[in-house]
Image (cartoon, rainbow, N blue to C red; front, side):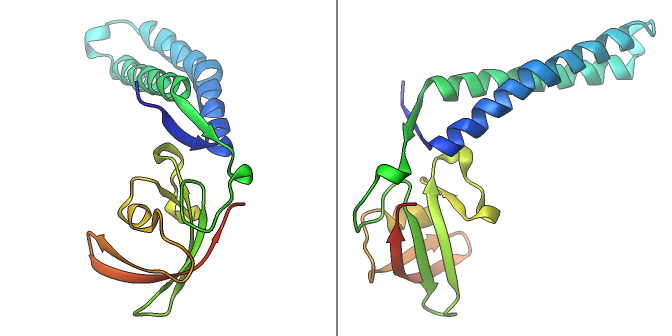
Length: 157
């Protein structure tokens, strides 16, 4: 049983999703199934089949969340220190070709969200950054081709 690394914030978000799915979504789906069942013939009842499918998706996600949370290894980023990139680090990079600056925090797979600046520990860029330090140059093999970045700073916030 492999541990799943995640930040405290990521763990809290998963717990909240689990709570919502169990205490809000599940009763609403059960109610929808009950209402659809009251409409009669289930073999041709699209509402019933849609509600049952929604129930299946919800219960699958509940099981997945329970598994992830049971295997969670919560890493308190505020207690981390050092000069090299590791899980939880917030890394400021500059693209060596375009001079565009980007800031990424390396987080667990389940909490990754590129739009909010969080990349998965298993992403190509995170794997290239792990173990590197400020001032180092890294080459990332991404689906769109090779990119070169220079690490401007490494922080643990």
